[in-house]
Length: 132
Ligand SMILES: [Zn+2]
Image (cartoon, rainbow, N blue to C red; front, side):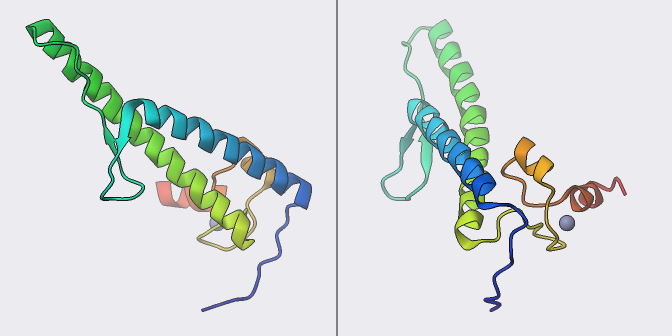
C-alpha cells in the first residue's frame, strides 16, 4: 500500500470551506431521508423506504403506491448523493481530496467549487463518457 501523501493544490481555507458545505449538505440529506425512510436495524447504514398508509380505499391505495414510488426514487438519489458526500469527506480526511481518482492529477478548483463531490477531473469524465 502506498502511504505517500499527495500534496493538495487546494489551500486549507478552501478545503475547510468545502468540508463545511459538504457537512451541511450531509445533514440536510440525512434529515430528508429520515422523513421517507426508516433505518433497518439489521443492516447499518441501510434505510428502508417507508410504505405510506393513507387508507384502504382504491384511490387511497393508488396514492400509496404513487407516493411510495416517488419516495423510492427520491431516497435512491438522496442515498447516492449521501454516498458521494461521505466519500468526499473521507478524501478530505485522507488528504486525497481534489485529486482525480483516475489520472491522479489535481481537479481544478473551479470544478470543485461547482461540484464539491467530484472525484474525477473533467478530462477523465469526458473520456469515460466517450466524449474525447
Ligand atoms: Zn483525471
